[in-house]
Length: 383
Image (cartoon, rainbow, N blue to C red; front, side, top):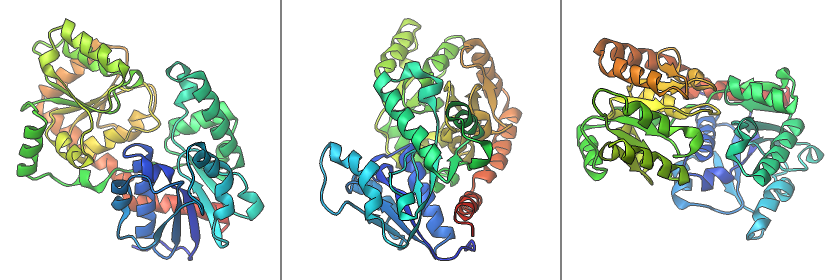
């Protein structure tokens, strides 16, 4: 379906698209691919300080509406960041109508060149939970994000929770902000064949039954809560944690060792994106105990894979998982243990949660999101 929109040239800050395999990178790649699919009459220029990773650029191969654009002269070290902030706008094509900062930043000089702007804010966790960040990082993020929000013609928040934070911390009026959710990769929406499931189980040495958690293993993601809950179950359950190790991982592993759970904890780092759907679909339950998220894509991935989910209260996970999932206090392992037993011990409840989850995530389908994104562009360009 071609969503009605006259032909325009739209530019993006694509550094995350070419450098980040997950998170902000997935968001950027998903958004520009959706736009090319549903508004193919436009031209989309992806500005990045260098080519980045070949395998990430290749995920957008074969989309003729997309063009990667680099600095006129090769840059090195800190000059790449300076180009994104101060030099990029001077290299925009003359007929660029709109610039979209996909990861909370906008280059200077857009208004001077008559280019309207939109910025996406994913989260303000560095302000909501400052203890998780170094002071210098908090200062830089605050400076960049506040400036982008004030200079942008419109702001996209990826959840109502993020919208509230933008209003609270930066004093941005509500009418300047649109909430547009994000979806997940199409691969999570299709059953994985039995041969691939078996192959993934073998390569990652997975148990037959396990609880899955996906996300960097850091303090905010709160994996320890899941281990504390498993320690209270009548019989131990295997936990497969997929994500980047941080120093917090040692704390989780020490707890597991102290409670006889080391054989039941499987930490998988550097997992191929292609293996993720199989890891979800092989799980009995997905648990996302994070204290705070900008949105919570893993909840959507789990629902699309037909896996019942338990999330944590306190941020936006209810927006992602919907009423079909269950939610617990991120500081209450007893409650989480009860919920795990409830879900794994009641097949009718599991089926209901899976059906409700699939129905809920229909609102995150690409055509819905693309339509909302183009609506924001129309507001900015007064079309």
